[in-house]
View 1 (cartoon, rainbow, N blue to C red):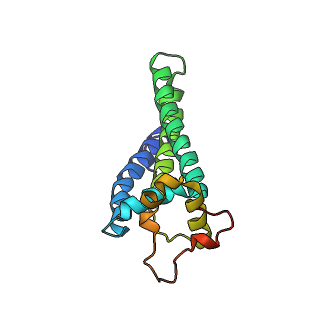
View 2 (cartoon, helix red, strand yellow):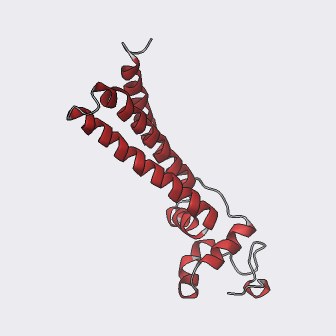
Length: 157
């Protein structure tokens, strides 16, 4: 088929994923609005509890898989795992880490408007001192239909 054995196939899959990741990143960044899009995407991930939880979970999995990939490679190099670590375990962890990296960017950079519930959650999750600065990307223009009236919120600002 592709390579001579399964370890070659794992290496090819890892290479294809890494090569696909680069244009994917440029695609996601290109889809953001030109003014303040990246800042808004970062604020969305940091301020909305559900998005923050998912983003940090996938980011943690990504980091753990990259570390395991290196650990398995090194354990094979010193003779503890033999060729299994280098041929199978390390590439599988690396592929999983690249997939997690793609998911981190998809969660963080995909352009999606906040729902009204997410806007309220974001507003509640920010200390009052940072409210005006941190929520600036989400602030609607006065009189626009999406404007959130903080005085109608029962928990208040």
